[in-house]
Length: 87
Image 1 (cartoon, rainbow, N blue to C red):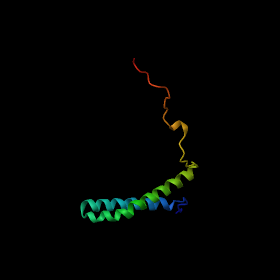
Image 2: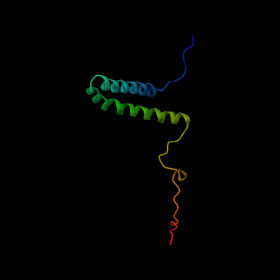
Image 3: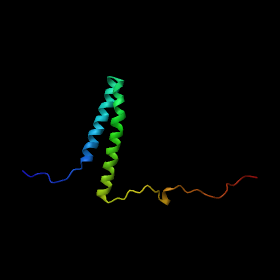
Image 4: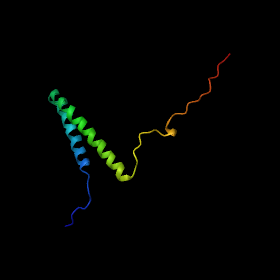
């Protein structure tokens, strides 16, 4: 039997577990007791942290540079001409 030689990021696994934990907390808060929602103050930010870390790692593996600056082509074109008025 051959061993799996592919490396798997731990952040992907932890992000999936945090996502499932958050889903369980939301489901239990809806079905059984609203006090479960207090745990969501911990699980939701934890999920966001690991999802962001996973995305950064994915972009790094693909060689995509993360840039927060907008491209000039992304901005809407605004005309500087004055509107035509009826006289």
